[in-house]
Length: 196
Image (cartoon, rainbow, N blue to C red; front, side, top):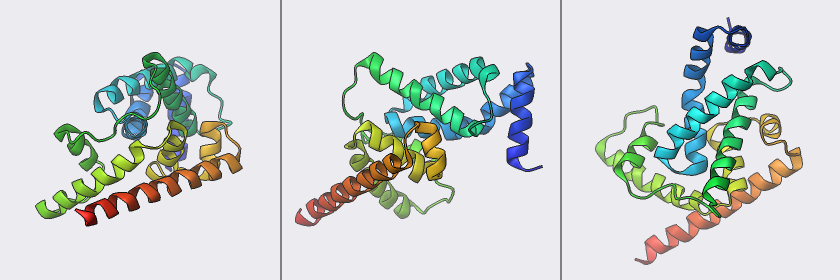
């Protein structure tokens, strides 16, 4: 059985009240949703709460889910809306910090890597991740979100249009802007390092 078939069966069982199927759906998507929310908010503590809110809203709305979009796209849309609600509640304007040289954040980011680097590679990796996260930190929320969906979650352009309810041209132009701004920021960071 392929994963799409399994997800479809789990969604159907969950819609019929199967608690075990609901738990399995949460377990399958928890790492992905946590990663997406962390990328958008930059706050490890808030991520856990918002992920729980996302799954609670999804499970409550599961009866209304129709397979017009993939379940993953539907779930991502809920997660993004939960993040937007969080920003509204906190009246956050601009970008939240992704990286605060905090050991717990560094460990969270390293968990995203599959390989086990040497201590020297870990140090270089932390430096590089820190620079990338500092650059991502400066992106406006909409650019950060589309960047996270494409580059971190590896969604296709079509999936992103479904999640964000944007036209394909909007997705491509905002992703282009996000990449361009990141490249400029990383270049300026690199120049600062060489000037020191």
